[in-house]
Image 1 (cartoon, rainbow, N blue to C red):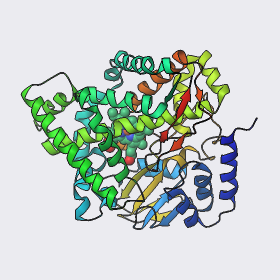
Image 2: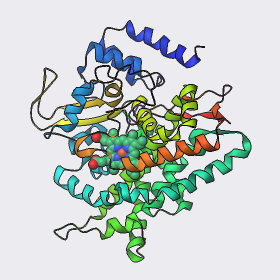
Image 3: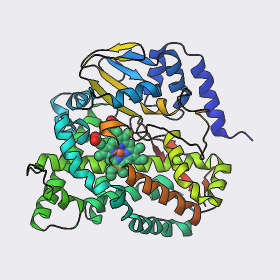
Image 4: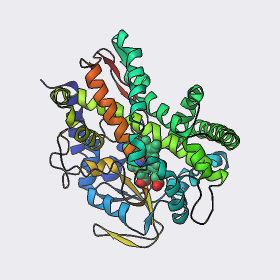
Length: 424
Ligand code: HEM
């Protein structure tokens, strides 16, 4: 039987196949009102113009890339960087200044030397071994979340489950008291919205500023408190961290690091959990297979990361002219990398639109590559594997709620679901 989801995808495939103008295809991809079936349009863009010069994506001239090979090359090229020039795309003038300044202090946009130093200090807390030590706590959080919803027989997976797990985990790692969690909800949403491509109106900018100032004041107080009363958490470790030359992180570095860890550490995993669970439930035979073969969960998680990733876009700027797939990219030019385009590239993945939870190898780019490779990848994998194992074991009758459809958020850079009603 064909599911309604297949019908929607086929409908978009036929619309996309009739489009020949790459700028028009990109316009559809960037349209905030249409966020569901993305991949037919990414395929069509890759077919018509895999390296597209446009000013639609960032409001100024940029190259949009959709092929796996090109994106891989741009991510690994030693002279193609993510630094403060990338943060300029968020610049909307003085009214949005705090948000842009905050971005410049995060790992993603620091100058290379400083990036490497700050990353070295933070990454000590994210080694696979440090992450392993968190497994029991992650399991405890998951069991608590399921205990709460189990008697009701239904939940909004995004609100009741996917949002809570990564937020609790990263806040506990950082030393943020659990009772302060509710105030992060709006800041996290508003900050993600402000970092989007397209649809940035005055209200989005205003809320982005409020969120940035909220985060800054909150973290400054928490840092002060930790300085007075050190604890066994990441915040204390970052405050105490000393490089070989004896230097330490400044207050600005500390706030920028807390901000990126919290923002990058929760929404991405929340969205992957939501879209990954939806993909599995839309492929019931694969869901059933995993129930009886839980040892296949790590391979399945890699496929869910590939199939529909939460970080759809990365950005780079070249220091020098370089050649990409026969096109010369000039110095200082921005490249916008569509990770979802790479992950579904038929030149790299056979039958890329088919979910195959046993796919190996699986060279997706969902955690990036090169210097800025996701620092939290081990933690995210642990959260995703443990969550999936717990869901399959404790809610084996899990299914989509046919009466209440799921909906995507109005966002592309960080793709995700706003709501996913489930029954069990
Ligand atoms: C499924 C979940 C996740 C996905 C899909 C994801 C994806 C990514 C991607 C694609 C990048 C590279 C961005 C670029 O190259 O421009 C990145 C960087 C980063 N991620 Fe993740 N991430 C996830 C979870 C996490 C978690 C749980 C944390 C931390 C607790 C985290 C922290 C970071 C940080 C700090 C960076 C910046 C690294 C740098 O610039 O050196 N991420 N992530």
